[in-house]
Image (cartoon, rainbow, N blue to C red; front, side):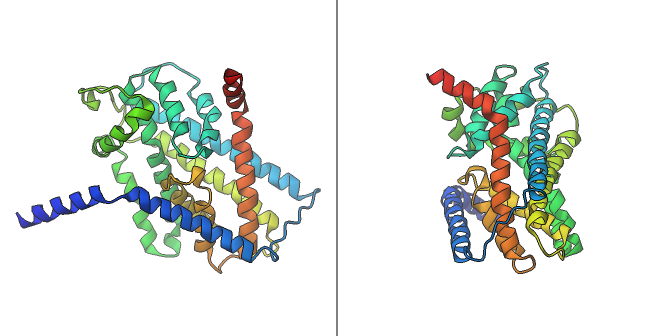
Length: 318
């Protein structure tokens, strides 16, 4: 009885806890850390590009960033299929790619809004809502799987495989029920109709485990890392580095940028975390230059693929 009372009090405390406030503090602190580090090392930071060699490398980095976007888009498509969508709509991937640039808009939800509204037209609102909302969890799980390579440094990294426990037909409904509070806050933005129907009636998971979607999310993080790694080796004059250490720190830093929605596309958080986690093991000047070039390249990839969507929005306002 006493244990139940303690659990109840603990849950009440968590509900009252303003996590959004802590996320904003973490975002601002990360951004401040990155800015302080950048300006304090500005004189030591040199960006020397060899047009005959480095531009080709940076172009390949751009191509891998483009490829990562398509991996992510196909993963979303298979998440929708796993949730039981019977629609034969084939342009889910293209719409995902076109709206990817919206993740940079302050607020961090507008790409979700566009995708939800698109998906709602070809399926039921509950499936559209939850398959859109659960996608970041797939990305987090894929990133953590890659980060488990860190077991070669410490066995504690094996714990990062825990999010996979909930990616199955038996437990996914538990996760979705916990998202009911999010549903209430998102109803206005997404114009989600109120319904008393249980989402189990509108969502029909077609298999026990979403292997295809998860593998595609792993491919998304891996190609993203390759794009960053090409930038790193382009500006790294010292070949003494551990690619597995870079992969682990990249995956963890990217995940932290993902779970702090205050940061549009993880800007500031990802960079600050990678600088901090790499410490003195990797040359910080090289990391800093690589992060700046990778952020520019990945943003250019998003912008290039989203140009038709942006042009359409602009023409509608004219």
